[in-house]
Length: 419
Image (tube, rainbow, N blue to C red):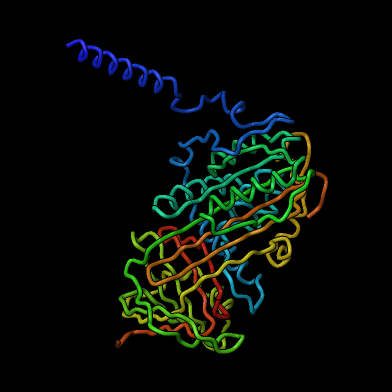
């Protein structure tokens, strides 16, 4: 009996202690605690962690469908900016999100110059609200994640208004690193990118310096299974690329799919499990390049009809990096990226010196794995059977991954040569 009483007392003590621990953990950070939680003081390091985000903004924001049109127009601009013989993958959305965050660090004139290319026709408040809503919609699907981070050199103080906007509208983490040890800061930045792209984008940033003032990061990942899987074909099949004939592993299926036959090429929409996303596979007409076909057909999925489609395409495994500053002129971003951003850090301006994107795409018979990361780096005081249609991708072709409800393009891939 005594042993039983002692056991009951011990159990009661443990329950009380556990309840006490739970009560001592705040459910959410207080409104007036945000500054202490993530706005650094000069010389203070702040761990890179999720800061105070007002979740009600995501629930109450209104999605402006002009935002989709603007996003897809930028996807076309980005497609036209890559070389004609380029094979690779990129994410217009990852770059857009990073630049949309950046726009909040400029004065009104600088912001509008940037948004005139990234989101023409929309104000900064329109863009922030629509971005918040889009992020909440995209991440409803398991397997799709979007993460953002703002990292300031702890020699400077991050602008509180900028940090709150990045947190509240873009779910951005905020941190302050010691850039007096550039190698250590670089390791942390690339570590965040690698972790938030599931190891698919590595060592995106090649260097930072003691004069690096701020880094804005976006990571976008997607891992989805096809609604109905392909069949992996035995042996290798020819692919007639720009570099000549190569033999590659192919996947194939015949299914009821949405498709469209256009002057520029044939497009089929292949749904992923859950129905929230699809891949548009675009086979150009023989006198049309993949770039031209993508530019012509993005945004025209609503013109597709349902029919029996046989599709045969290579397995894909792509990984590449792009220097956006080198492409700035073709992207229409040269002026905006050359401007000074006065609202990123307190009491000083910052110039954008690097914009980098790394992206990865794997397409197999079971589904698709894709990841992209974008880094915007600012420096203080510097400058910048019987079927209705058959699609046999045995020559240069293209792919685009869509969020179906909004029609937003997340990834685009041009395949001129087999990887």
